[in-house]
Length: 412
Image (cartoon, helix red, strand yellow):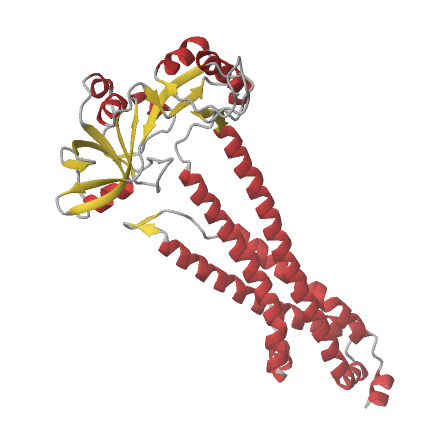
């Protein structure tokens, strides 16, 4: 394959003849590509971060909790405060056969765990072993709660990732160690890296048997929340009215009071997230390609100016035998080189920024979130840049081909 070095030297000479103009023109393309690649990688990373917040949650699960009633019912006024009780768990199990797992939840706010001279803010929560079928644990050490813990009201706990890092900064297996929470000593039996807290920061939850929490926190028979998951193939939104009706009858509440008995389906949340990121991806491509197109138009305009300045040069070339095809190739090549250099610089800069974000989201040598764009995505961007270069050079090239030697001499 023959490479004409003189052609490339001429292209380089033309582009560097007016360095400021070439730089400012290329910057539009650089910024467009940078915006496109950086937004794509950033959007991917943010989506992954949000997915991690709900990692392990069954997609066909629901959360049920009590709120003040919003409808009067059987002589009782609206605005009435009420609480779910432990017996509601059995009611749901018996009267809603579509349910697979039903787990009651008790929660506490603003606790503090102490181990030696180390302290950590915690959000104690009590539940049953069935809860792991709704929010699958990711056990780093030890085990989850079991039926014996429940039956014997054992003072044991499973701690979240942040609590573990705060109380045991040296690492290692903490199972068997004792920590104190709100004046009560618990033996650590597990570390769950996937534990979620509905009332505190991620990783600050400490899970204990609900039977113990009822006694230790004087909660009696009340529960704060019921987490449920449906059997395979069951759509939770279709059985939400049935679950609400079961609890409403037991507490003399209007079965149609959707705000008084909150039933939140996680499938709605996951669907909302998917729809949101479809819109975000569309906006990313719209903004990125729009900015890139604006840069390409800028390249085209500057190339038109360049052709106008080189009227005499092009006319002389035509006079000594240069064909229109040679002139077309020269102008388009200059446009492609300018857009490719600026565009590839934009890709490299965006990749560098995304790599820094990944380093920031690395813990213990493990990458937590991926921000980098894929190889084929980068190739696609490069192809788009080259296409933009061709399109940007077409109009200037057409003008250059229309120049006749006589007109060029007259212009001089």
